[in-house]
Image (cartoon, rainbow over the protein chains, first blue to last red):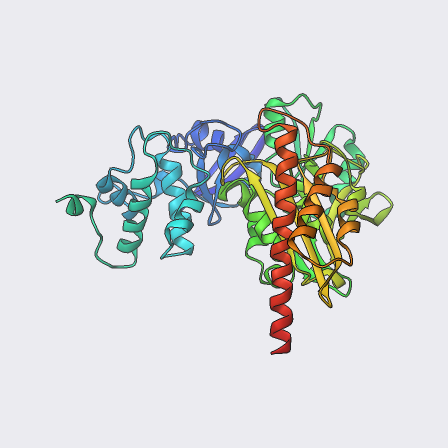
Length: 166
Length: 294
């Protein structure tokens, strides 16, 4: 067993786990943070995406011991009981998720992008989401939602798809 | 995953001493994007993992008297963001960008890409076309070998179980050499190359000088297309000569047919991509010369 201490969503969390535990297993099984999903488990689908020290990574491809001392953000760290994160708000308003299984990963990939690049173009957004497979939406509304969230975060008025359709 | 022990190496020397203690049942973990898949689904008997993802001496990108040294655990994202690589070997940035997706590029390392040694690796062709060398650390210390001698076959390198890759060095005289990397996959993201090509040259008095052509995914390892290089050297970069160079490169390769593409299709791709890369590289060369005259 290995003792691990990591910061998750701003809070120091500790666990003692076998060496072969992935970061994804640590988050889901030990910390009950089930927002990051177990999809393909080989780094193809992106459903397990979390942010480690500012970078989006596949939690299924990182051993928990490799996360020791690092700063992790999961989907549970974005909203509080009062308000959504602008990305979550924009995804809801655009109807950018259907079944939603890919959603936590997609939103965290988008967050990692916007944290570094507050005004990405469509190609940069597509590149940032290329590692998150979504079989429902076709991505169009996701890209629209990321653009809207970027506008909200920059303090500009958002362009709502509801407003466009009216 | 079956149980294993993890040791965190503080630097490459520490990693080698851990390997000496536990070889051949020990394996190096860098970015983990290939190794974790192997640990979950492979049949290798490793029970010791030597984690170099925190090793202090393996993550620098440095210009030295010899050339450009890239540490083995530099990630694909690090490469894409490196101003010195953008300046001196931009084809490496295109190659890094073509790998996997953001999440795997944030974890995966250039050393891991070379050491996993799959024929379709995207880091290999550009480095091979730039005559890169690799520094290896073993129990006796450091040694240097040409990158081509690292590659033995699919998933097989020439390193002993007690040795690790320290860095990759692009020789000084090839920094800034016009080189173009092109990859043909079935999608843009999360796709392995059907064929990838790095080709470059300089122009001297309207003639091609020092052409280098490297091919990936079309032989047991990444290879140089030496007959094609020899054909093009000293000739004008005309459409006809570039097409013929591509045709010769396609003959030199030994592609296989698999569920992604047939060998014939891969040969056609080689001919097209080699000519296209050389055309772009020659255009870059002319622009640079025009700028120098201005």
